Length: 288
Image (cartoon, rainbow, N blue to C red; front, side, top):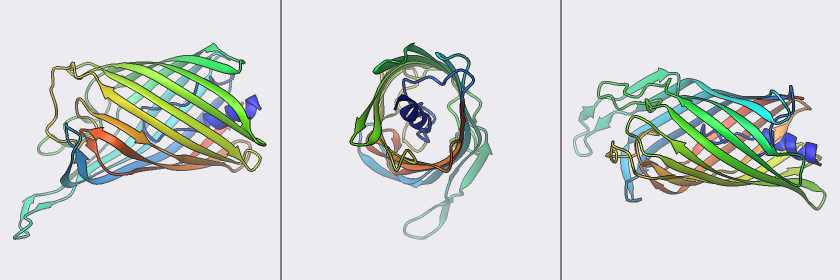
């Protein structure tokens, strides 16, 4: 059962670049790779006090590569590279006259990239534990467009330290797992530090062909930076952004190596973040 649950857990990726699954490292010379699309289109956002306000319709589309490779049975290398990211906002028109007030714009660039390592502190036990370090590389555009308000990155180099704990078990005849994580994200360039946390559970159905996932995760800003609050949450990269998000996902194995996945995420609470549902789809490949 351990192998089945391990394979299932590796088949997870939030669509969100800030979440990596599980306390299980990859086996030596084993790997998992995923090509995915993540997007959100929103005409409203959470303010800095958690209320929902309207905004000009804004969209973000990110095409990314995610990979894990086991250097040893305990040490796994991780990379997330959004090689194409598109951010746009629509025309702004007067509600009374229809007059064009602000012309819409778009940028198409790479996005901020993450490189990391995961080390298995406790492996091959009923409860496993791993520690991870992720480096956020500011490769995206942090001030695109005429007014500098289109972004595919935040322009700062950050370092995330994270602990993951996980366990596997059975529900009837089905393999299942549960994980939890907590992390501290140190940020630069005047951004506030963050606490990151999450819970996740998955159930393998139809002899391991279909994995169903329920995920709850969030970010809590320490609000100790120098930039202060952004005026709105019409970007994914403003300072002091917070959220608690529910994100179910399903992954289907086409064969022993290939599979597809789809999911969505919706914020149950937020500050300075879009107040609309995001979506993700992907195709993954795995070897041992």
